[in-house]
Amino acid sequence: MRAPYVGTSAAMTARDLTRKRLVLALALAVPAVFFAVVFATTGDRLVPITLAAATGRVTLVEERRQSLLFISVAATSLISAFFASSLIQRQLDANRRLVLCGYRAAELIAARLAVLLGIIATTALYTWLALGLFSSPRFPGGVLLGLTVGAFVYGCYGLLVGTLFRNKLESIFAIVVLVNIDAGWLQNPIYYQNAASKWLIEALPAHYPSQVAYLAAFTSDRVGALVAYGLAYGTALLLAAIALYVRRMRITR
Amino acid sequence: MITSPLAAYNVTKSYRRRAVLRGVSFEAQRGEIVGIVGENGSGKSTLLRILVGLLRPDSGRVGVTGQLGYCDQQPQIFPDLTVAEHFAYFARAYGIAGDRGWLAMRDELLTRFRYGQEVNVRVNELSGGTRQKLHLSLALFHRPDVLILDEPFLAFDWDTYLQFWTETEALRDAGAAIVIVSHLAHDRARFTRILELRGGRLQ
Image (tube, rainbow over the protein chains, first blue to last red):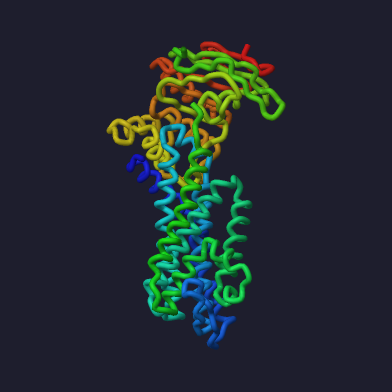
């Protein structure tokens, strides 16, 4: 891995991406729209939730606060996954030409990962700041960590999806379906407490990040192990994406 | 043992049951411009993609010695990057970004191809011909030892077409082996030899 090669590719990838102004505007709009809808459709009544990581303990929380937190994880996951798949799929042939000219596929994907980490940090921070306007979690830093890990796991999922599928339509479908089912539905602790197959919910990508965010927002429990599990989950997806990308970009000479 | 800068031996390639290449062999020597012609669908682009390594042959061997310059039929460039950014990106890819000379090489090429004010324009704002010119320039500017071009001049205006030949012949004179694929070979006198791909074989 040659650092100057990664640096040049990361700089070009970032320029290429930031020139899509409409996409950036939409990325900023998604959390705002999600928050507005949740704010308008929830109240301040107390609802019982059960957190998997809090050994099944029932906690009473305000409906609006828990819904805003839930939707924050979904928003950061969705944005990160979309950007990641786009980073891989954009100009795949031009990138293969770069490999033909001397780049290594691993350097190109490392550059995309560097850009993705910037997107993850920005998205998580922006969503966290917006969340702070409506809600005051017990440990704000822990909530930020949860959003960041969620964006990381789903960013790595987006990289994998972008590598698996050549066309945008299949990628969008794969991302929307999983994010909706996982971060947008099954990880909601109100649903979780009465769910039949909890093991399935706990195996999904947004599980650990959601638990980190919820524990930090509503309890005093430690989140270190959950953060590590989430990062390990994302790293496994990332390694699969790298292996597939290197195979796809391979030159046979 | 492969001794030529560019060589293919007994290359075969089929798409499902349709055999496109049936044992293609040829060599390009230093200082040669070899033309490969053939009808649409005769397998010219498949052969080139195998030569550069973008496609794996079903059987046979291919050898490329030295720096490669390659220009596909479709412009493989980044729509949201400028012309100057493309040169910087590809200078890194070719491993010459650390050399002081690459900027001079780039500027000479920009002048000769008359890019003018388009140097800082994004590709998606350029005309089709200028995009094709950039696509070609990126294959030329590091002065490759082997240059492989697939229908490189279809979108060129007359002046750019003439400049294309000036650049290509200068590279040939410097010792590069050059292969140009086209479904129509104008200016036959400019080629050292012309081979026709017919029935999956070069004739």
